[in-house]
Image (cartoon, rainbow, N blue to C red):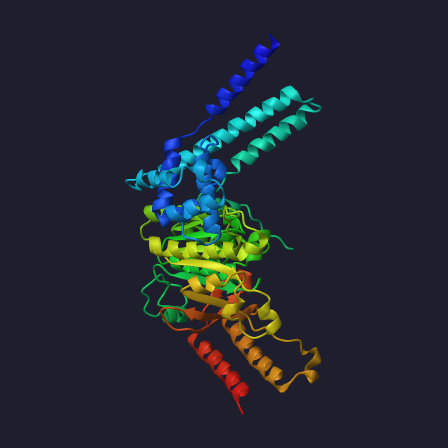
Amino acid sequence: MLVKRDNAMEKKKEKRRLDLPHNTEAEKAVLGAMIRSNTIFMDYIYKLDVDDFYAENENHRVIFAAMQRLNKNGIPVDSQTITNELINSNDLEVSGAPEYLIELADSILTFENIQTYLDIVLEQALLRRYLQTMEKISNEYYTQEIASVNDFVRDAQRQLSEVSERIKTSDFQSSKVITDALSKEFETLKSTNDDSAVTGTPTGFPRLNMLTHGFQKGEMIVLAARPGVGKTALSLNLAFNAAMRGVPVAYFSLEMPASMLFKRLISADSNVQFDSLLTGYGISQNVRLKLQQSCESLAQTKIFIDDTSGIQLGDLVAKCRKLKKEYPDLGLIVVDYIGLVSTKLKVKNESRQLEVQMISQTLKKLALEINVPVLAVAQLNRNVESRGGEPQLSDLRESGSIEADADIVLMLHENKLGDSSNNSKKSIFEKQDEAVQQKQQEIAQRDGGPDTKIVNLLIVKNRSGKTGKVPLLFRKDFCKFDSPSRESEEQIRALESERVNYFNRD
């Protein structure tokens, strides 16, 4: 009798396993589209995992795993290369290739509803994981001793949270939503005692516009610097300058929450020190009025922030496509920064360069596909510090592909004044260099105030125009970059020419 009951329970478990949510036809449509379209393949390869396909559809799992391996190794994906990979992995028989691959590709008549099929596959996979996790929790309750109810419930919540994290990404937040929240926050702050002709998206910096004519549609622009020089501040200034001219902007912030980014923007717009926005120091009624005016001004812009930490590359691409449909005049996409974008590829540490290469190539393809300039923020490696002088293209961190894919490469460089304590031991060249820097610093402070410094924006690559150097005034306390006055810029350039001539003399 006991044996019959056990058999009945096993049959019931087997039926539940076979009845788990799945949609075989949607899985076939997704795989077929990936075989037929390289664009869909590059998007979906990052959005899916092998276990997103139903376990009973083992042929779908081995085919997708073969696609992942091909992509990881940089091999183009089509029916022939997939078949060859399946032969190498001894999965040809279970996959049904090559006949089944042809069936998958031929099943796609139109790509119009392919996003719907992908959503179905992901939703069914999520529901399966939830059901399987709940069954696991239930089995643990019936088969294990529960020493602490609180610990058991806490562990159950953790397991379910891990399932939900598979799809947990924040959506865009509009400038109106963010500034409304900040406006309320600023109300509670209390004072304490402690262009040239532009054919693309305008940058807000006349000399940069003159050299680039603005950021052009389909371009990938890289902005690189060492930490602390002002990469995020400048990328925000570029986004703000475009948005204030009526251009919709998407900004992906992988290091900083949306509210903190807008505090930086409000500091730059209102000329209220950023530190005061955080602490309330020096906030009077007049200052609060300035903050409210900046909130109202920014609320009118079309800046959309996504602050998903470690956003998946596929999700980033999908969100940009969606925003482009909603705002056909989308004029700039900013990714801060490229080194924190994630992929679903299981790569080894030594293959990080390959992963960055895939991210870089995908961002370039995205720019071309939706016809919008993409500004990717990147890090420079330590070589520039040990070598001295201005950074070079070879200083881009992690991958030479970034240099190859970019249409424009911008590098921020600060000439730091040396230590004057050992002035007697310095060469005449070092003294001359510091004398020039000191004069330039005086010009910067005359234009922007006592805490202003000159940071040079180097255009080291420009596929469609000129390279050159754009001196900028960085007011760090206000998270703000400004162009120097025309008179000051002429003086800065004259000093730079004097310095170059001095070092190049016979």
